[in-house]
Every structure is written in C-alpha cells, then in structure tokens.
Length: 435
Ligand code: ACO
Image (tube, rainbow, N blue to C red; front, side, top):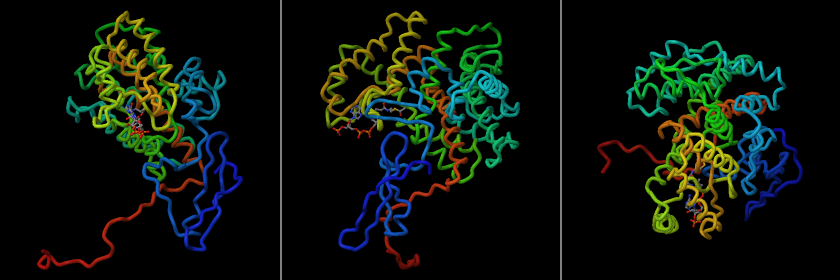
C-alpha cells in the first residue's frame, strides 16, 4: 500500500456500541478511499458492492482517469500527448516500467519485442483444430492460453527475468496470433512476421499481405494503427484488467492470466461496442432517420441505446474519442473515401446528441468506440476482428498491471465476499420422503 493515510471516517452500527475509525488513504490525485481491511475483524461486518463501483481493489501507479473532467493519464502523461507524439511500443515500455525510455533503452526494448514475434511452429498446427468459422476471439482465448504449454522457460512468476520474457512474448506474439486467426478464417496462408517492419506495420502486413503479391506499408494507415493501439493500451481497473489481476493473484502463469483477460474482454458490454456502433449506423441508414432513432433511444419503454455513447467512468467527452475522430478523418481521406455515409451519419448523430437535453443531462458523451469501428472497417478489418484488435492493444495494459501486482509485497489472493440469501441450514431429505 503506497498511498498516504490522513484522516478517517467513523462507522457506527446503529443500536450498538460498536464503532470504529476507518483510515482515509489518499493517492497522488483522485478520490480518497476508506480503508476497510480491519472492519470485519473489529466490527464483524463486510461491505456490499456488486460490480465494485465503489471499491478500490488495489493501488496502482499505471493509469489515472478523471471521468468528470475527461482526463486519461498513463504514468502521468496525458493520452493526447502520447497518441500524438509517442509510439505504441514506447507506451508499452512506459506502462511496464514507469518511465519513458531513453534512446538506448528504447532500442533494446523494441529489439526485445521484435525478437519474439514468431510463434513456436507447432502452434501453427494448433490452429487446424478450430473450425474455419470459429469466432477469432475463441481462437485468441485458446491459442493465448496454450502459450503456457509452449514456453515453459518463462513461467516462474517469482523470477524477474521470466516475467520480463513473458511480457515480451505476449506483446510480440499477440499480433501474430490475431493475424493468423483472421487468415485461418478466410483460408489464406499464414504470413510470418517481418522484423524489418515496425510493430503496427508488421501487424498490417500479417493481416493484409499474401505470399504471392508484394506489399508496401501505407504510412498513414500504419500511424492510424499505432494510434488505435495506443488508445486501447490500458484503462486502469476495468472488467478484463480486474480479471487478469484476479487470475494472477492465485499465482497462475501470465499466459493463462492474459487468456482470462481476453475472455472477459469478449463480452459486448466491454470490448464489443464498436461492432455495435456499426450495426446501429447501418440500421439508421440515413441522416433523415436520425430524429426517429433518437426518439426511440429516449423512449423509456424501448431498450434502444445510442451505441458508442456513455461510459461508466467518463461523464464528459472520452479523451480517446476526440483522437479517434481525428484519426477517422485522416484514414478516410487517405483511402479516398470522400463521402462515407457511415461517417456522415456518425458526425450528424454526435452533433444532435451533444445538444439534446436527454444526453446532456445524463452526461452521455461519445466514447472511444464511437469512431473506431468506422476506421477499422475502412482499413479492411471485418467486424469480428474489432475486439481482437482491442485485445492485442490491451495485452500491454494487462501484463503491466499483472507485473505491478506480482511485484507488490502486500499482494494476496483476490477473494470477494457475499451476502448469502439462500436457505439456512436444513437436513437432507431421503428421495422416498420428497414430495
Ligand atoms: N444511450 C441512451 N441512454 C443511455 C446510454 C446510451 N448509450 N447510456 C446510458 N444511458 C442512460 C440510461 O438509460 C440511464 O438513464 P435513466 O437515468 O433515465 O435511467 C442513464 O443514462 C445512466 O445509464 P447507466 O446504464 O446507469 O450508465 P452506466 O454507467 O451503467 O452505463 C454504459 C455505461 C454501459 C457504457 C452505457 O452508457 C451504454 O450502454 N453505452 C452504450 C454501449 C457502449 O458504447 N459501450 C462502450 C463503453 S466504452 C468501452 O467499454 C471500451
């Protein structure tokens, strides 16, 4: 625990003489927390917080979000500056190590990741076990989990060198695994990684190229890919990151933990929203139909939501959405898509929603997914690959959070409590006596 303790909150159980002071702990910035760790021992009560909306489960130095102000910082650096001036691998170094690398540290790190991009050749055969129409996220869960069966030499979580190599392996191999999942689904040959290309260029290469044709990286698309990866790299204790931490708290190996994170990300409430935005735009079909759609969204009796709007934490513009919007325009311009009906619809929808009292009063602003689907579609990614791309990027955040947890001496196994509401103790009834 590295926050500073100052002040307290007093808790009293009504009608009893039981009372205790809960220490208040303060981080560098952000909300303070009441430390309830001794509450059960002293008061005999737990806290109740389904969804953990009011619970800090760890202390972390990696990412800070101020949802009211729309601020996202990685190790203190604003996401806008990182997206504009940094690269995905540099951000990966920052998240993992706490500081931006100097020139030689950066070179060593990039080299370290690059040297791990190939997969064990037997993993190639592993793909053949999947149906061709398997969802690529199913393939990701399976293949990433299986990495622990192929790389025994980096599984000792108590060995710093093993942790470092596992991090390199995961960051380096995820694009290869993802691109092969796609190639497998369309029946094209797997493309082996090219270490002369940058991380985002190599990913686009493995995804787009075929052995029979030359392939040249498009710098605008490579930069867009790098930026999309940066924007998804980490987002503090969201569902998938908390899943990785919980799995890791048991001492499970990092490959198994990241596979757990991928499974958690798969859900439509988490990683699948950009796919839902595209579906929604297609359903609306034309700008003229926006008012009709907006009134459906506002109708209390309908379950229609404006996808890509609203966020559990951001009650302001998601800072990533602004960068995504700018990137979207750059990509479409580069690809010569002058009049994209989906983009026109999205821009108009955003304009209307930002001024409509329903959205203003509820603080519903565009989130990172509002524009990312349009970009990815324009770049040729099928919708089933959107969450896979998210997983590739988020692997950096997951492994950084996992490493931070393992290196924290106060770390213990995650074990939430419950309120039991089932039957109280009762005796077994023999079958013949049951009605
Ligand atoms: N469209 C219309 N109304 C909405 C929306 C939306 N997208 N989001 C929230 N609301 C309304 C709710 O109906 C509710 O209204 P009420 O007070 O009249 O009942 C109010 O705003 C609060 O909504 P909650 O569901 O309590 O907000 P919560 O923080 O739980 O939900 C969530 C956040 C799930 C992201 C929600 O805003 C949503 O469903 N958005 C659309 C899906 C989406 O874009 N998800 C991506 C999130 S970003 C990511 O995971 C990478």
